[in-house]
Length: 266
Image (cartoon, rainbow, N blue to C red; front, side, top):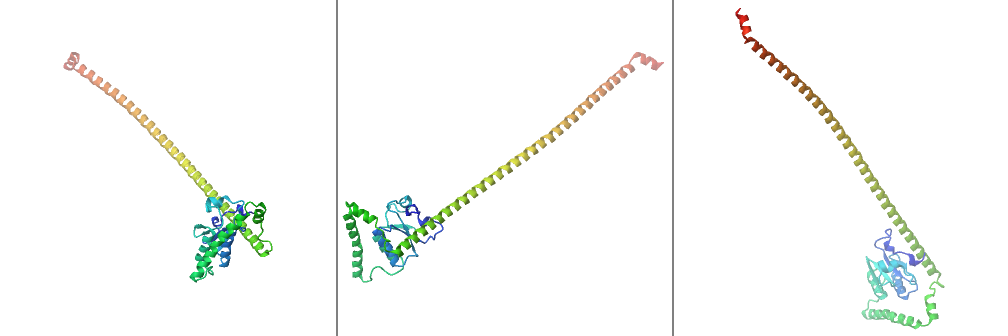
């Protein structure tokens, strides 16, 4: 797998948060001197190397990591630092290991001037290649592993480790996706259960309401039947009362008639 397709190591949740990452190109002299500084101070286990293909730079490097899109750059303590000379000083000052510069102030100043001069030297050398296609091709196609089997083996191991880290990252992302999908399915199932419970509850409420209506209808029918019976009794009572009154009225008239009086007197 090419370096251009790799993602930042620190994007991998499986890696330690405290890990520092040095992004380099194996053929870039500016990156090489920071790489040499890292090795000189014995920081191979503290600073991870991630190779960047300068002819096919990955989009994530510029978009998410280092907008200048150059190498080298160092990811340390949540920040990104660039420029090789600044990085040499930063690594020397912020990491353990033997110091690059002498303690004597005069010698230290001379060493800093010498290191700074390498920028001028490199620019002069590379500028001299411009306009000469043969030299440009020779420089960019130069194999730094030629005659260096240990370096070749080390680079191979580094690339394999990067591929393993990337595979672990892909696996972790898939696991996260599976977890998210499982959580989504659980939420959907829970919502379905809630919906089913609501439907059952609504059906039970409707059944209870229908039963209540049925009971009220029965009570209403009984009340109406009772009322009709009472009305019937009232009609009968009124008829009997009216007949009684008529009878009493007829008796009263008969007693008060002259014929009835003569019968009594006789």
